[in-house]
Image (cartoon, rainbow, N blue to C red):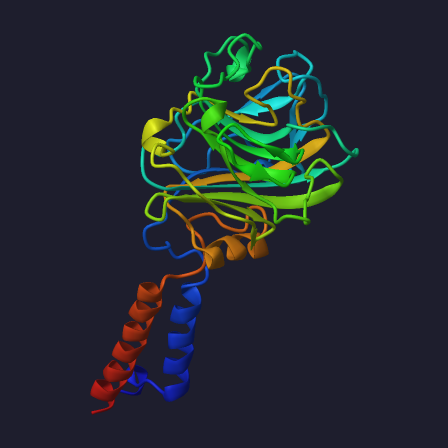
Length: 313
């Protein structure tokens, strides 16, 4: 019966492997990866089954090992502005959401109000949902959820004083409703300067907050007005590199490697893990387990030890 025997070393190794599995793609409790475009793999397909295929417009290209290149620029209502369309209605209809993007920008500054990505409810008038400039959001009309690469210090429509730099913006009832999660005052980071970045927007419906993370580090969160919810937002267009405002510059000279949408608010530790893992480092949920997940692995390890005792007996 020697073949049925377990030794302590084997059991400890098995327990260690189970625990390590918690950090290697085991689904995170309550936070499913609902969309993932891994552009660095040379594909426009959503890695999550049933998701939409991205579209390239105005000279955007994709290369395996590099990603999607937005080589040409112009105003967001021009036909020279390279961009990616993810279609529409890719965000959860309500509740929380986390949006993450990995990219490298080169070629120096572009100008204020350049968008890294933008979800909006504008009527589509050009391919992929590109705006024509005739359907720009108004003071009390139009909706957008966006990551601005470059902002001046200003007071936005909601009355919030912002320090400038880059930000996550949400407006569900025109630009007078806009609120931002920003860089800390005196620590502005402009994403249209040369560099490689990972940006995350975490809209936490339970906490009522929007938090911008830059390279895994939380910036200054904003407490949202009660009307600023996904339930009140319609993402008719989902764009990378383009603004909802026709005159804003596009995000040219930028290569995107990975773009993800989760259907819940990731924790700070989970966002940091995604940054540490890098583009295409996660193919299922975030790799940082919840405490309940770790508890399950502890129970599994204890079960193996009990099994060892019974076999030896």
